[in-house]
Length: 154
Image 1 (cartoon, rainbow, N blue to C red):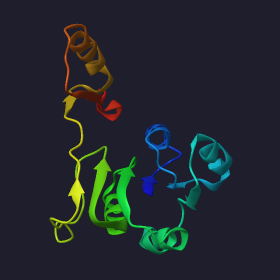
Image 2 (image 1 turned 90 degrees about the horizontal axis):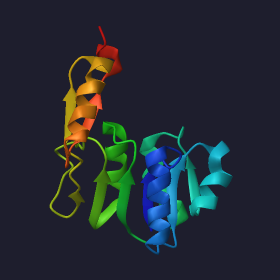
Image 3 (image 1 turned 30 degrees about the vertical axis):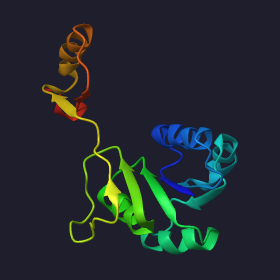
């Protein structure tokens, strides 16, 4: 089985489809229950309500399957979601994250792996930084995600 945190998000929806194409027969996700039919159409077999306490996630997954979860994909990647996903992983499991690592250091063991997120470059000036980003793209920037923070616009 695979666990995908944030299956209703754009990134989560892609992860679901990759999991299905990769041959996972048991795809568990957290998501909005009003999106359950749509998520199942993408390949999800079980939806856990995203409003449930994250501390209940391991028990919710165990209620679905007794098989070890070897891969957890956290499309949200906040500290709380990373820690919850890490808690679900079986020894030898891998946590895939899309933002900076935020798993509590005292939890991390050599028995479980955490992926490295993409390199990011924050462009200064809020929305004004978009022009600089477009120029970088035209020049072939690669191996980095360009980010602007709109709230920093003067």
